Length: 132
Image (cartoon, rainbow, N blue to C red):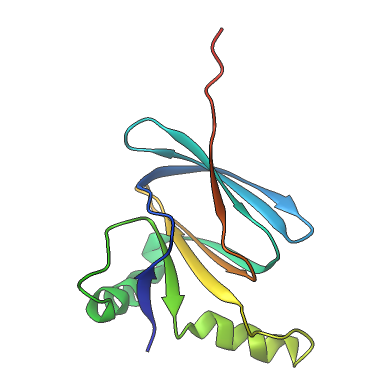
């Protein structure tokens, strides 16, 4: 059964502003409710999905039902027992090893959801605002 657990990054994303990248590296630019701007950098991305949160109402209901109580409120989690990883494993027909593959789930305060399958933990970089 899928459940959410905390990852090493705890952040309160208000808005996912931009997704860019290719060749297995993606950057997600986001802003927080406190006005900070950050970039989440994912390397060795093997698959990624973007959707609106309403497209996952049942999924999030089950996450809330099965997520451990000690889980810290954040907008980025790791999905344990991921159905997405199982789907990916089936789709690649053994051409990619899934050992070490992690499913990250990001949500913002506006209804965006991003699922990322990657071989490495993301890094969080603070983005400095440009002042004129």
